[in-house]
Length: 424
Figure: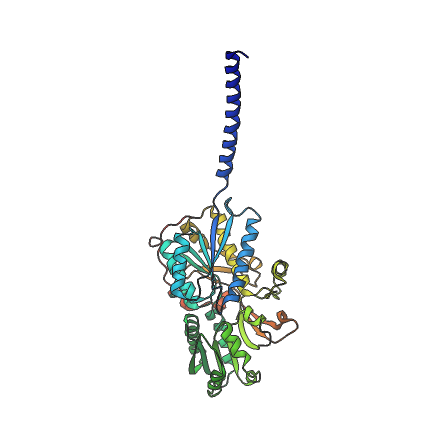
């Protein structure tokens, strides 16, 4: 081959190679560009300590919702990435965890809570950065009043909602109207007791004594002895988690024949895992055996995933987490943005039909308190050891307007001008 032909052939080969390489680079670049960064949702609930099982139930609800949307392409063409972090029950440590998730992990949104003190601590940090905090499950009334924030939305019913109706029911049957308060010595217990006292006054109840119960109730024997020494027709219980389990495991069931014991809320996790514990009267916002549209399908979907686990049936903690996460993602999709101010305004207008909520009434977000007003139910628990899930009995439904906590009218949220912009 002569020199000129060699040069011409070399040029052609070079051009062909350059074209192929360019196409590969262009293809790779376009593929990379089309793969948008995921939207990171951080689940924050204590995975250790007395609320560990509740946190697992909460996580399951969040994950079920996120998996549903990811199977349809995520949101805004972006995958939804769920990360989990244990804030513990230490409020100071929880604040540090929240800050690190925002600054180092660059999360988009925070969901969870379960522990009301943790929720208050972490949501205060989120407000400083403008990060939306979805409180899926913590039922302290203070979450929607003193500890409310522009960036926080509370999707669980609280003790005030339940006690408003339950206390009226109990006092209507009481002869003396004498009430003994059992109050857990933490933010959740004290806040719920405060709301209970307000209703007692309007229902002509008389508080004869209030007993503060330690968060670390080791042996309820002394407490039960003190309860027996008090002359009261009604016992208002604002004790949570395994403390509630320990207390009711030690009480003679005959006690409930002569006294009305009212538990503002009893968590499914505490009931299902200790089916021998009787609970005379309590409130929930959903139950697996409700005859409402969508409930059977949701239970079937849950059991397909978790039927061989310790919590083989879903309770209202899982339900609330599922519904709250769906509300957040729907707001992102509807507004076509992750900009916090835009999503906040959308969530403030949140309304959901009874069918979508699997409840008996439509639900709506209170724009003043950022607390979801929803159906609540009066329930009782009678032991069924062989089939624990059947121990719960729903006695009645309460519409949102009948259980709303009046003190939410006083809630003061930060203005939008005081809330930093944040677009993950």
